[in-house]
Structure formats: structure tokens, C-alpha cells
Image (tube, rainbow, N blue to C red; front, side, top):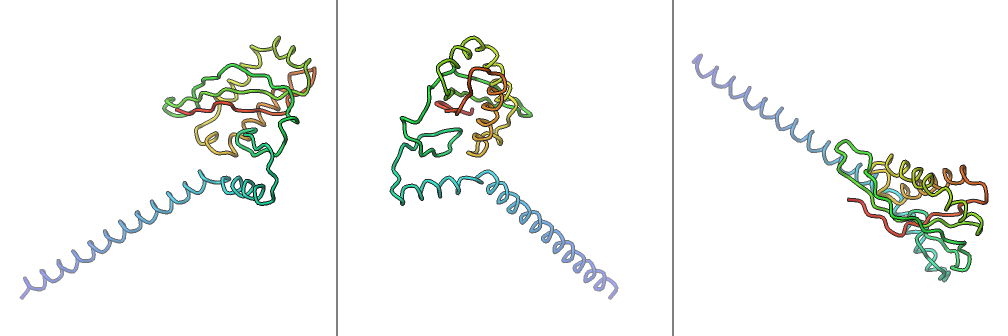
Length: 181
């Protein structure tokens, strides 16, 4: 009789431990699913605003030059409104990461407000390249993979270059190539 009671107690303990284990597994699965959802929302954030702007401009009949400007922002400026373009050589930089295995290859053209600025940029070409390389290499994959991230990098480059030039200012940045490996 004592044996039967021991078997019943051990059977109840096994059921309790199995139930606890099952609850822990379910809890972990829920946390993983929620974490994946939050990550997906953060990585895809900002794309809805871009799609809404693009859809709105098409439905209102404003068919103008929709060129990629400042990291993906849709611009409604006409081609004749764009200033002088100053192409830069291709930049290949390592992105900031733990493993150091990601790199960015980008080709950039600067929109200038006058002819005299291109002469100054020619003279300061090494400094301009250095500043842009420092900015690009300080970014992580997550920072530059979204449209908002590209726009932020563009603004940072514009601010940095405008602070070091005298004969005018950079009006915009155009990425003509942007590859992340």
C-alpha cells in the first residue's frame, strides 16, 4: 500500500514538472515571436511614409521628376531645378560591427550651388574624401539600411562638408551606387 502511494506521488510530481517545463517552453516561444516582430517593425520603419508620399504624388497627378535624393527621399523637383553635380570617386569602407565583416560601396554626387565651389572641392578633395569615409565607416548596417538612415547620413555629410567650405554650399547628396556586402 505504501508502494502505491509512492507511485501516485511520483506520478503527480512528474506531471507537475512536465507542466512547468511546458509552460517555460511556451513562454520562451512567445518571447522569441514578440522579439522577432519588434525587430521586423523597427527595421521596416519609415517605409510606409515613403510609400504614402509616392502614392499621394501619383494620385494627385503631379508627375514630375521622382529622382532618388538624399538616401531615398522622393523629390518632386524638376531636372532643371537641380544644381551643378560634382561626382566623387567610389567609397569602399568597412562598416562598424563586432565582426568587421560588412562593408559599404557607395558612389556619391554632390549638388552644388555654384561653379566656384567645384574649384574649392577640387583643392580640398583629400579632406572631403576623408570626412566622408569617417562618416560612412562610423555607421552600422542597421543605421544605413533604412531610408531614414540613408537620409540621416546624407544630412550628416552635407553638414560636415558645408562647415569646411567657403565659396558656397552643398545643396544635396545623390547616391548613384549603394551596395552593402
